Length: 289
Image (cartoon, rainbow, N blue to C red; front, top):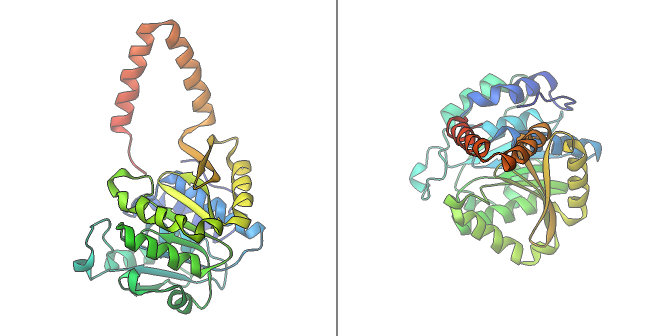
């Protein structure tokens, strides 16, 4: 993972966490997605967007800790999970462990205020109740709770109603075929009037970033500028809105080398077979973020 620079929040702790610390916390946040969320927060600072941070479905805190470290003074964090009520975890898409979460928070959230922990089924929560817990609306709200379609739609509605002006929803697992309920619930959300209010603007490493239509283009353009010389980027669409796909699996330099190798392989079939075997071996042993 590329070293992260130009950080505008809890500098040293944030940098240590992004560069290596996050790997010691169990969870599903990959390094490229962490970079994307961090840069989105930086863009918000440039736009003078302030607000709290939140996550539904925190597991052991891998993304939550990052969100906490991205806070400016006065911004609060809210963490929502079933925690000890795993009997309510019907789809087993995650496992919130409050003891492990608190242990990880003690390691990384030092001088900062701890997040407000809410042990509840997220379907019993509302935008108003979550904002009350934080004392105001949110600029970043991660949705990674139950992966059943009704719960996903409910959680997206909760997040959408709790955002500040210019706030961003970070949705997990939309493209994960194992959890098709996430796509189902998200599709239900966007086929309602919400599709005229909210737009996805970026996709990377199992995360979809969403904001109000009036802000989505600004975020997309700012992220394109931030990463254009670092990773491959593809233009696409989602729910009728333009989105940028950031391929953090390969840097631009690696991409150009791979393209040159493919050109050579076209001329030499034996080299092509060798490259396929090497690529297959790398994919097998490549560690997850």
